[in-house]
Length: 470
Ligand code: FAD
Ligand code: 2HG
Ligand code: ZN
Image (cartoon, rainbow, N blue to C red; front, top):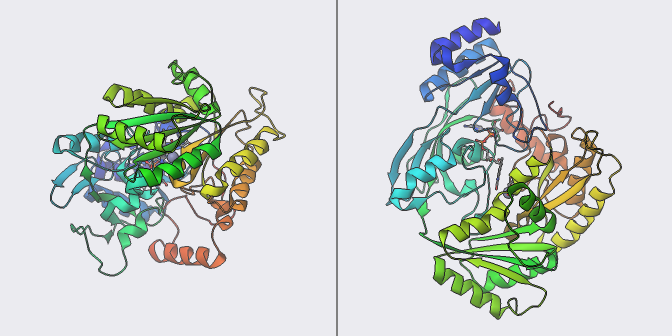
């Protein structure tokens, strides 16, 4: 069966783009963190929308399930397939353009990486206003499918705010949504918006019309060392009022900073250790830094003996200071296979949540069977959006009870179990922590309408009792 399908698919995409060699397929069935591993019948890589439609029609005729994958940088196992699935990789859908500077839009195929799109836009003086550390590998299709956030949501919103329209196909290869090249278009339900955040379960996005903004030529960054998470929340509250143009406000705790220093060999940015750090960014190099420092002085921050500060308004300095935040994810992975969480909690409860969650992790009864060490928590994230990332090292990667405990704690603090990475397969069984039975029923009704046989994707569904891959 697989052999016959592989031959038919090779007729569509060429033999080099139907992959069955287990050594090659391995890179597609294991997730970025290394915690989740699945399997699949084959990987197929169409080169354009026509080939994608033909591939989907062949797989539908064979009655198999399709899992769509872009850069495979998702952190909730949404792109991890199961034995017998067809993995449809979008990595050859890489055309970009046209750009429309008047409308502030660009068209990109789903497999275009964020870095490639930014390179394309730079000479036009434009950029996609969503930025994240996986930029070299993550695709705009995957970013839309997960409604990715990143470090500039504070000012520009998540991917949902950037995706104006998409081309998308149904699971059996029929057109589902046609791109409308207009900035404003309120003609009925927005099917494009529905596909944003659908995690590969409702349709296959092949092309996107994206909002772009003027790229600021230079930036100013301040990294503050603070006495704790509550102090970071308090400084942020002041800065939001004093500096309305604030572009980013990121939290980094001491454990994260130590890990980045150990993984990268970079020097400590501050003269003393601090429990928490806040990274603030404004556009316009020197002028931006002036505004930031004036506002910090007005808020009494620069004179506070408990606070240290590092600042930069030149490209190299800005890159260096951002590195302490940007490189946390890769640094965590350098020391083991983490448990990862992308929670949001109300600003007023952030410090309390971090303290309780830290205690929960440190007192957790099981250990990593390999290192024999006890779990260690790391807290960081997009403080300006109330989005706290919790990473845990030295926990047993198969200990799902630890995940359930952390996510339940977030829900008990009026928080969300997914601020930006999505539900994927990792959290599907806990959807009810944040959504009512009626809401889940409505989601299922949409799913059944667009994918009646349940053959598209493994993320999000079933809404209860999802199996852990690997
Ligand atoms: P994949 O991992 O390939 O897929 C993700 C999901 O989208 C899967 O469910 C898949 O089925 C679906 N999908 C992919 N392409 C399509 C398509 N064309 N049509 C339909 N469904 C599709 N996320 C944030 O929100 N903010 C961050 O700051 C952030 N930083 C990150 C930093 C690092 C170092 C890493 C590794 C990840 C980070 N992420 C972040 C996770 C984030 O979800 C991904 O980086 C990105 O959004 C996924 O893109 P991808 O192409 O890799 O998607
Ligand atoms: C970030 O904000 C990403 O850096 C990744 O969302 C978070 O590694 C993580 O847990
Ligand atoms: Zn994040």
